[in-house]
Length: 315
Image (cartoon, rainbow, N blue to C red):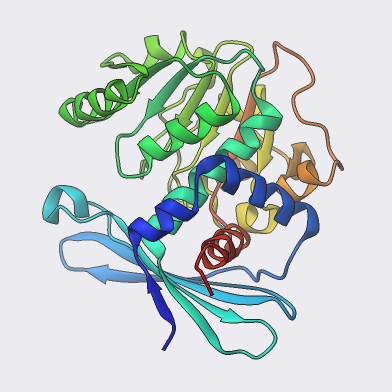
């Protein structure tokens, strides 16, 4: 049986700086990652749950698949994370199972690291003020990862439930950030250099006409076509990038809805992480530009992270 690597082992093996570097190398080199399998599971009287199967492989090196569930409202109802997962890693030469990993911890860290990788291309070098919209399990990871690539000192946290924003701000303050909870999301947008949004909203939370020039907007939620964190105005004003073009066009509500309305054209999507890491498209070019990175998650990121974890295990 393969070894089980729990949350603590995954966290130890994936410091943000090392993981960001591994993702940069993996997107530059490339690997095989089909579009993930996406299944909706109805629940009586509740929003549907989602089952995702995410395979990827590097021939003769590694094969991996993540099994992931998304249960909206879980944290409030049960105290469990909304996103839970396991990851199974196989040897690419023999097909033998190598390791079973805590996929929830893996997902949190690789998602934050992918956003930070994009931020390193797209945010102004002097970005020091971050607005975190959403206070779920992913939010502190996003703050910490962004702080690896930019000199983040001030963090504002907004959440629909103010108490959760206050708890996260307190946690971040204990880590040394100048963190505070905010109730006026629009006013906070006027202060932020980077806006990171990780919610399950179906209505826009980042109005484009209130985002100031020079801001980088990191959209991490809205993983279904009916979800959205940005509005058409933001998509019209911004230079738009995605994690993977295929995934964004298939699943990203922010992209799909803007394409449908005409606020965004396919040609206006400037590039994805493959193109950025391979130098095939430019990142930020003007200090006053508004940039947007839309992430839906990719099995590329999971395999890169899982391989890094497995390499940390002696023997």
